[in-house]
Image (tube, rainbow, N blue to C red; front, top):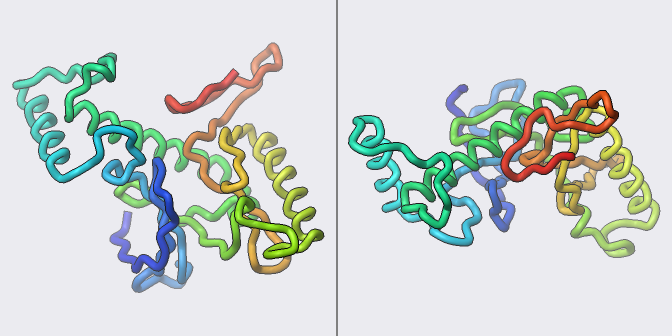
Length: 226
């Protein structure tokens, strides 16, 4: 991974399991875009219903890892009930979950490389945080569109048709998205109209069994697959 420096131009809120930023690349190469989306999986800004992050949590986690490394403490995280979690267990849990979601999204983008730049964003590279540097598409998510206000009836029908086709194209590539919300479809401002699907953190690749059912090839703890 190269050293990448950027200026943040926009922050897409709210943060959930990831943090999405519009950035301008500093000192881009001839192959780099001027603007991109930086999607980070940083546990410090993870959507947390309990145990919000502060700097003391990092100290606790680092001390725990040091103690495990020296043999002073047993690593009993796996199989531990969350009711029994201590501070370091929560931080490790968020770290494990974030890494899992990142690895899954990166794997799906690689698997769907033939669709990059058409119905899904291009993935330019992975970053260390961890995260992904993705194509920025100027447009609106479908949940923000209102016919007659910021989209015409004809464009709305075309966008809906493209979104339906995208779901089938993913299925043709043996991918189930698992989060087909309107907020995960972007309708481009540029013409010809283009619809792009985003957010593959909980997607999964499938294969057909002899019985004809689809079986998950990989999954995270968020996935269910029949």
